[in-house]
Length: 442
Image 1 (cartoon, rainbow, N blue to C red):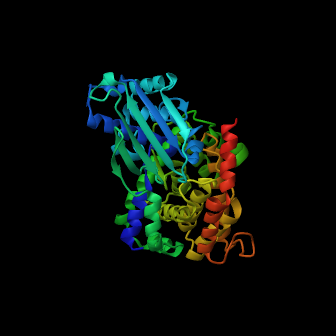
Image 2: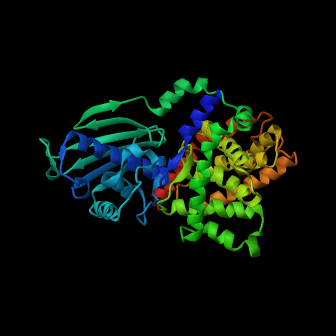
Image 3: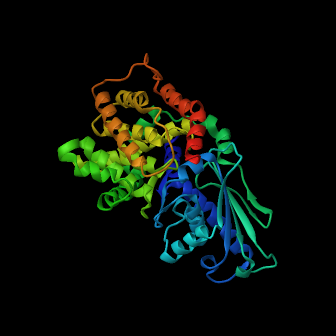
């Protein structure tokens, strides 16, 4: 890949997201469907806050798994129904993963009413897409001056959380495009990024070209502070920080674990602050950045080396995720914490071989951690990932690396990455189904 292509890749995969991205994808599809009705009918002013809106959402199993127990920003509620209702009542599809930006008490109250009135229905789609949402919205005739008594529209999202591939109004398809997965199949042979390329780019790219990545610090550090100041979720980050002297120790590892977990605490429990996401996941974006940001705070790292470390971390996470897929049975913190481990090694003057050793150490350590949905408990997994990242980085800096005679590790770091991807995407398919079955039967 050329430097320009690498920067474009970062911009596509590293972006702000308000709330957990699976329910946000549902909100985005619902918002788009409502906007289509608004564009094709003469709607009364303020109708979205007053109309009788019916919402039917069909999602893939993985979307359901990651949306069942996670907090929805500004509502004090969890789950896909209220996310769909909020998207219909006040969402703006042009804002993408920040579709719910600017929530008001009135919109939250109306969304909750739609849910309590039984106007929102969620079902599992018969689809091979791991990431799939179809939101169909029907509006009571009194809200619009239209020949159709019950105007209805739908929007479909596939393969990327913010990629709308089909829309329809009154049973007429308005737009249909190739799904992201199909598009990726056509371009996969052009994907030639390697860890070597990533390392060279992070070290040599002009600072002015990559300084945008410092927004990572702005957004995710604000979330961490929100988590530490408030009482979100399990308060994992807060517990670590408040017990550093007695239990965890006043060291970098505990500091990084506390800050990173605190950001996840806030995000998973419904904070209205956005996260800087990575590969469609806010938690992955947090885990790929906060340990590095924590290092910069503790040791006074300047902006340029911080930016280079964040570029390295985010790209390593994107690279591994390319072979794993957007959603899988493998916890995303495995991928994201591998990236942050590389960023820590870079900040301590590590070499390219030591970066490769870091990735292998991480692959041999926490590969296999399962994803059982997005929820407040994710903060504990994030903290565990940060701990492993620091361990792997320390060992790599001592030129200690898990050898290729062990398990899934190969001499070639790229083969090791592909092994992790194969395990998470293909090898754990039955695990993914079992996890969802268990969650649905509770």
